[in-house]
Length: 267
Image (cartoon, rainbow, N blue to C red; front, side, top):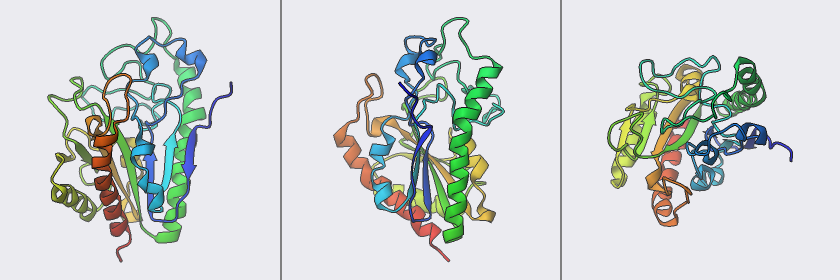
């Protein structure tokens, strides 16, 4: 059995790039053999996002989807493993524990610095090189582009936040990764829909991708959307896609992407 490609990439023609850095589930067998039983279910995956965002390619967006699990290497963490939320509980570039605070590895089987460096070069870096190339291509075509970092998470994760997470959690690095006009459009669209709770720069302000690539002055406007998984799927094993709730939220997802495209197309 050969390892899959690091990512799947579908180039588009519109000024919108959708990144899905945590949608992958692949773990090399030799790594999975060192995992605990809970970790082998890769529970912290952003499950089913390509299916949920099926409209993206129809809208002409470019779509970049990671194939490897975040338990191998987390594409949305800095390469030096610096904390994105100092003073708060976080998981790292090569996570050692799950969102449920369970160990990923069997005792004594954790990756050393050399293995972490190898994963960074073999899996993390190609994803980011592709992301950079596509942003440059779209900017050359359109001048202004929106980078949409798509995520999902269980609605209740006591390790990271109290109570239940809002349905839609937009992050713009406290306004640094995109122009205020874009975030205003997105929040207004959710409010007009009226069916889902939302917050801007709440518990999730955007991870490494949003913060690293969002540069409004250079024409790149980055937004992270962290969606509560109960909006479209079963939050616990076997993590099934749920057709009815998914169908309810997909029109809003399309509306939000259309708002991003309208913003990118402004003179």
